[in-house]
Image 1 (cartoon, helix red, strand yellow):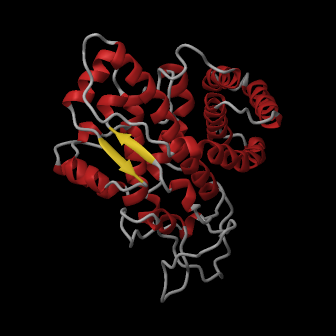
Image 2 (cartoon, helix red, strand yellow):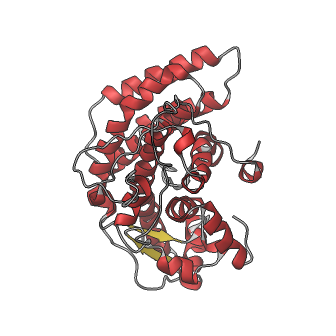
Length: 344
């Protein structure tokens, strides 16, 4: 199945965890965004809810993780609508990596000149993962397990580019461990979750650094456009990776039947640029033309207000859709696309 077919295929989620006893009085898990996307607490409210009938969506304040087990029977339809689409995109990440050299959070040109060893191994593992069959599945599963253990046991590098590559490798491994259908790998996936948090925290100081362009780019000579494009590729990949790593960890907890409180500091100060035209530019020239002639949206702390008000469907790429659907639900975003003559 290619990406176009995958995008149009019916969404299916395998929530593979034990149901809670029917005798338990558990309210349906829903993520009502009562504060709106202009509030940092919106993400907390999306992920953390109270069964109290009078204060159903009360935000539970805690500095440590709060696990709340539940079963698929207690996930309300609206809550599912905020995770189903993203889970399908996450499942495609290993295939995207080997076919497009990138993912929604990693620019295809990021490692064009140099790919750190940690990501080289993950890249090769993605190829093996895509080639699994009944004959080689056990061998490839062993290969994945050994490479994950090796990377997890190595110290965290100091250079931001190396840390970013480590994050990308771990995210690819985590999608393979969680969505590969091998129950024996699930415990290994659980062990990666705190490492993903550690890497996200290490990248956070760089993700909140701005350094964004504020002027138009000359088309000739191309030196300035090339420098701006190179800077954009690294900057936006890093910013998207911090949010996507957090998003992936949250999805993994959800699939384990747990909700955990969000860390506001992971979102505070975060900035991403929403523009499919910039992200999909194939050259410095294309990037400069898109920068000068198309509107791009600077989203701060997950406030998509301006995007929803002024953007067009062609402005949004997969990453933007994942974030928006997570915040507002698939029906709302499908409706937003429809009112503007587009299709999600």
